[in-house]
Image (cartoon, rainbow, N blue to C red; front, side):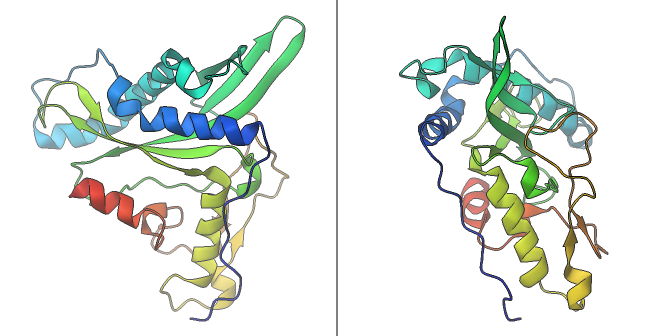
Amino acid sequence: MPMANPKPQPQELPSPERELVHHVRDALSALPAYFRTATRIEGLDGGELFNLSAVLGSAIEVQVVETLNRIREVWDPSNRWPRHRFVRSAQTFPDVRLVAHGKDKDPHIALGIELKGWYLLSKEREPSFRYTVTPSACAPQDLLVVVPWRLKNVLSGAPVVYRPYIEQARHVAELRNWFWTNCRNTRDSLDQRQVKPPKERVNPYPLPKTKIADQPANDGGNNFGRIARITGLMDDYTSSLRA
């Protein structure tokens, strides 16, 4: 199928956001070395573990936030963001924000992270989450982070995390729409391959309950947002971890 539009590319960031994102990426890449959790799972069979994956994923998100705040020296080595701290906000996008609070100032959000968990021993051989957020809801410096995990003793023990997948959140959203419209293997007509943005205007760091999802004109297989299926995005990463 001929490609009607050029492939989206990651956005170049201005300083100091570029430096901050660089250091936050370093901190996220170091998660396996610093990750600590008191969560322990015992006495489950395989089927029960699959049912608990969502709950364990939420617990891992909490621990990721605590870990990032504990290793501030990694993501803020020059102390340029002394008032900022990572906070989790599960009901909004992105669900982790680097926020500063002051008595005489409104909260300032320097960066957002949308966290997704990936249970490495799941029945599917790729991450199954759906990422449907519209690009305009993402600030240029926001990140999509996929954290792979398993239990230490396979069916029991504490969660163990692996090197996460990290990419610009807006870039992934743009690439998802481009792939859906131009590249996926389908017999749908051009109008059936279109992606529609939310009716209301969406800005970065939207309020809770804001409608921020893009909608495909036709999603017969409920696959829109399965970014792990986008050719060339996560292929090498998922293959290396599954190996």
